[in-house]
Image 1: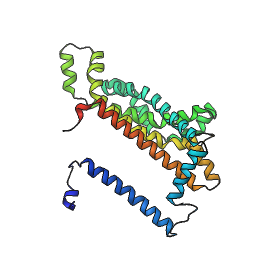
Image 2: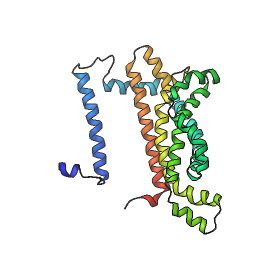
Image 3: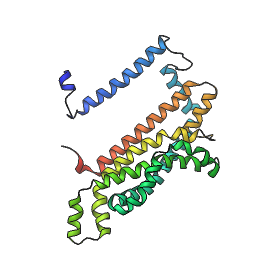
Image 4: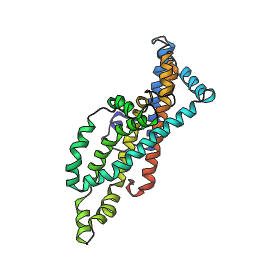
Length: 264
């Protein structure tokens, strides 16, 4: 492939090129990692070889019950994310449709978006103790305000002529919102949910390092105490794989639910 063709502006690439590119970038990453560890360029205690990390990952699943920690973490992420969506979808749509609702909620939501979610850990522990509630609350806070804003912005982008046509034909405001605006913005809502689910995974370790004995993050904190870097990296890899799998599931859901958006 020539350099000129490689740098063509906004020209879609084929499935084969995507697969080859994905393989090459990961091959380059692991190649550099293997080279650095085999040549002694890094401290093996801090940066173990990838083969050791994958062997440790296998041992965690096969002999040390790590699968239960992974399932617990998945449950926490999906539970908190479902609660965030239950609030963000209707509120974001209403804010995008009715300027009066936006004027009421936007100043409050905009302020909370700039507060880092980890800063709530001390107060969440004081309010909810050390059970599941503070972990779910932290994941919820880390997602909810950004998701509301994204959905609101997508709703505002629904074509005004669709709304005006429905009103001209005698549709009520409830019908316009539920039968015109919501179906029109739903594909973008799924995209926003896909983006924010990734953020929920980024907060997982933070949520699980505080007074937790279960979950991927708790395993990583235990490993840190004994300088088991291979276990920490195993946890990072598992979170990355899980995040990628859920991202692919959302992409598949989007293609299945909205086939009319596919480009020929």
